[in-house]
Each structure stands twice: as C-alpha cells, then as structure tokens.
Length: 423
Image (cartoon, rainbow, N blue to C red; front, side, top):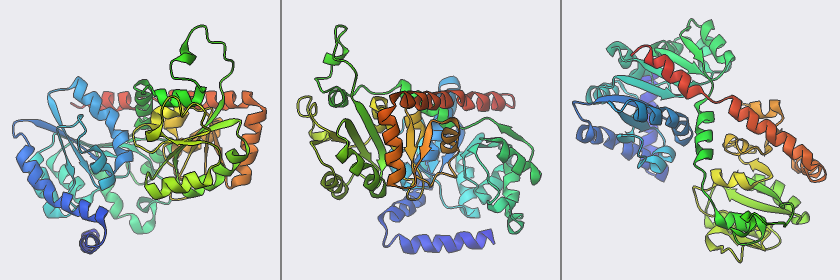
C-alpha cells in the first residue's frame, strides 16, 4: 500500500509541477540530487546524514550538525531537504559539506542514494519517517536516530489501521523524543529504545540569542534618539517606551493587534510580517495610523520619531525581539503558530492565536505563564490593558518565558552523549 501511495504521490507531483513554482523547484531538485551526490561525494570520507523536511526541522538539527562538525571533524555532513522552503533558504549553509534534496522515497531511489553516500550514521529530524530509506538503512546496519521527535495518540502509528505502517519505527536505532507521552506511546507498540531529551530548538534559540545582531536603526526607533546616545553612562532620559513586537504576522493577526495600537500611541510597534511582499506591506501600512517607517528606508533621524517600524527584509526578527516589552507571534489564526521560542528566550511575554495545540513549546509557555493565548481582538485588548496598567505583570510573565527556555536546554548534549557510547 505504501509503495502504491508513493507512486500516486509522484504522479501528483509531476502534474502539480506544471502549475506550481514551488513544486516545480522541489521536483527538479529531487531529480538532480543523485547527480549532485555522484559529483560531490568523497568515496574516502565518512558521512553523517542529516535529513530535515523544511526550515523548521533544519533549525532543530542545526545544533547537532554544528557540534558534530566542531568536535568530530573526521566526519563529513550530508544535509538533505524535502521542501524548497528549507533547501532554497539554506542551500549555502556552511555547516554541511553537501546539501541537496532527498529523492522521493521509492525503493530504487533509496537504493541508489544510499549506495552513493554510504552514510555511517543517519539522523532524521522530528516527523521524518521515510519507509524505504529507513528499511534499507536498517538492512545495511547503519545507526539511525530520530531527533526531537514527538508523538500524539491521533497519529497513524497508534491507530488500528496504521499498525503495519508503524513497523517503520522499528528501523530506528533510538528515538530522542521531546516528552514522556511520546515515550509512553512508543512503548505501547513495542518500541522501548527511547530517551526523553527535550527539543534541540531550545539549544538553537540560545545560540541565536548569543549571536544576536546589534541593530542601530531599531535602537533609534525604540529610544527616540540616535543609536548610541542612549547607551551613555550619564543618560538620565528615564524609562524606555513600551514596545510591541509582532513577528511572522499574517493579515488575520494584523487585523487584531493593529487597531489596538492605532488607539494607544503610548506604545511603539514593530511589525515583521511572515510574507514580505509589496502588496502585503502596503496593506499593513494602509491599516496603520501615525508615522510609519519601513526598515529599508529608515535612517537614525527619520525613525526616531516614528510610531511604527515595519521590517521589510529577512534575517532580523530573532534579534529584534530583544527590543520588545511584549511579543506577538503570528500564524495562530492559520495553519499554526511560528517560532515562539525566539521571542521567549529574550524574557518577554509571548501572545499568540488559538492554533497552538500541536506545538509543545507553546503549550509549555502557556503552562508557565510566559505565553498568553487569544481567540479574538477582545482577548488581545484585555491582555494589553492589563500590561499597560500593570507593567510588573510584563516583567513577571517575561521572567517565566526566559526561565522556561533556559530550563529546557541541553538536548543536544544528551543526544551526542548517547550516540558516542555506541561509536
């Protein structure tokens, strides 16, 4: 049944590639992957293979790759992606020796891929369960690990009709899961080589925080003066303004928070939308009152008196959260929230929409009091009113966010310690 489904899927991809640019990139990339490998694989090298479906999984695998590269230079790293949203953004990543798409999971592709690479070890990040690749890896005796995986009762592996497919999980040498529930669910189907280590994303956001960029334009926006003036030791300008940072926002998110700040100009607002397209940027500006400046058009002078700063470029959001009093992470009124940890690591309260139930880190933030869920603009207004009238509540929730993130770090160390014992 799986083999049949793969070929049906393959036919769908071929057809969709005729009409969809993203699918066309993926299809071409998969077709070119084996040629890339034949040209770039060093037959005398030992390769560790890391597979990440997309950009989010890449960020989970990144701490692991960089530690291996630093501590075990005798290995080379092959990084594969399934989605263009991962490959196109990270195809020039310096932490891997070879980067390519992973050819679709047919028996023929899996055999050719593994015959070419001959990995000595493989890591699949989170939800990656490629039936043919995994069975051939097991047949070849290659240690294979599932990293930062998380399981729920409604997944196919734990349904009566999915028990045959669940055999794919037995191909893994070990699971490094995020929580105890995942370990219990796996035990119920006879899989016991499982360690609860947490999520490597916590390690990653701490690394990102340590490497955060200094952003003079944003500092000038927040403090209302040229970047370095506020840092002078004799500065007596008083308290900083309250700053709201909205990251990875979509139109449904913006329809909730923008009207509030149109009425409450004692706050400054930074918006970093998920989609940075001209139409979306114009839409945001049309909804926003007061002086609005786009980051790419900002100077230290014109941004100092602005009410709203729109981030119209990529790569800055994780550093921008440091300037916020309160953060909002978008996506919770759509397919699912984006990265709440990038905000929480800075010790700010994190607000997000209701579609967060399958995001363990969001649930953790809610439980510790560092995260706040909203369902509509009324919820948002009530939260912001409390924060405005009681700034001490901002500090309390922010401290909870920071403590939660710091207490969850260490998964990368645990994984490497466990793997070393088998090497």
